Length: 171
Image (cartoon, rainbow, N blue to C red; front, side, top):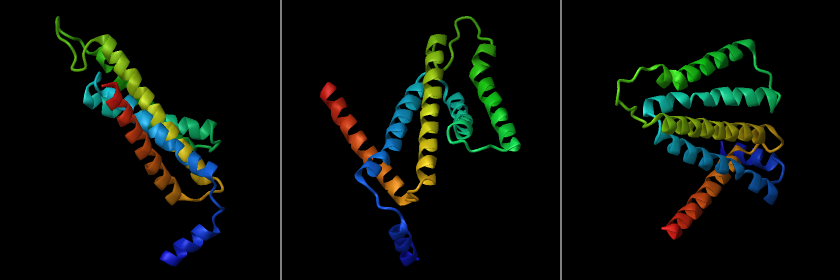
């Protein structure tokens, strides 16, 4: 099994420094999505936050169709439409819920909720960008999944350590 792996890696085109740097881009999307999603979680109830993350499927489907030009089948579009409607209903549910006087949502005021909703949708979109970018990188000439995963982890670690150092300097 290992010789087959080494043969396939030898047959792959050579990996350049530029290519390695491009493999680090998903870690930027990943870190940005985590920051946005966790920030959104502070303003939105956790149950709603989890359901809103399903919007990632909608964003990925739209980008596959219009950016990667990968035609989706009708049954796939039906699923995307159902998920999009469900995400819209979940996002709109606090507006439909009648609050008693003086009662506040678990996530805080309406402004905080709207802000959390935007952060969560933004984080979900960034996560979708990561998935589509990874799919594009994997479908090209590279065919190097171990490199993609390894470099994403390497750059993610570098970004996390650097952001931790910067946060420590600010305190």
